[in-house]
Length: 348
Image (tube, rainbow, N blue to C red; front, side, top):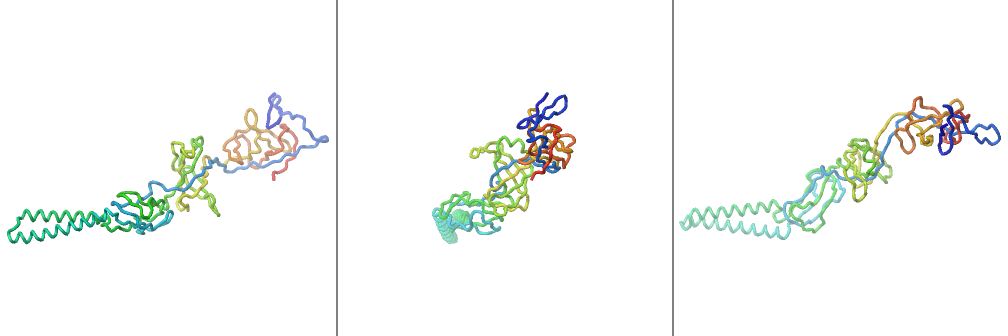
């Protein structure tokens, strides 16, 4: 004799048959009422819900800098601003040292040119040699090269920096009045279509994420939140020391409207199937697995089932002979045995 239990006795199996235990029926032969729902043939998804924010893809980031020491005179944009190609973003003034170098270079060039003029006159009078003239011409050429180099680095007067491409200002690394060195990163631009999301996933869930899986994306706090679609493009191979979660990179489909640093909820679709599903309330756990109780011709019929994809509300049932529209008990099964007479009432 084997006992079948679901939060209490469901029935006893004797010699291959279910024999119902006594049922309290109040005054005699009252037939118990059960609440039923219809099995459905529908798509069910197993999802992992993760939270994170919109960030810039490193491969699509463009850094603006200068090749000379200077001082930030004006910042013409703000983080998050969309700029056009060629639009002015920063004004850089030459640093005091750069301006001094430019003055010295111009003075050096003027002196070398005066010396060259004098030597030319002396050469006509036989008071200088051709070697002297060649040396003076070389000094002039060196002074011009030095001045040209400074001109390419702002010429001691500074310059206006412009965006080389259209994009969104993701970061500004400087402040007005700040002295900057040659090559320092001043500002970063990103392609507005290259935004991606970094969301955190529990380490034990990462085994189910294999890349390129579909993702449903929803902005958190948006007044009229719209579900966007994307895909997984990367899974970090470490736990983030700040969040203790694993970072998963999600790329939205082209045309998705997202804002830099916006908080998002991502539903990563791990598995999906079009199959027979039942409400989770229909499951009757036993020591050997799960049962469901169907109602057929006014009688309770116990069926062993295997579970497939599960989510918060529904579960995939795997068993021979289950069909959509069959009535499954979702409340009132406790104490009933296989073959019990029941009155089925639809779930609200």
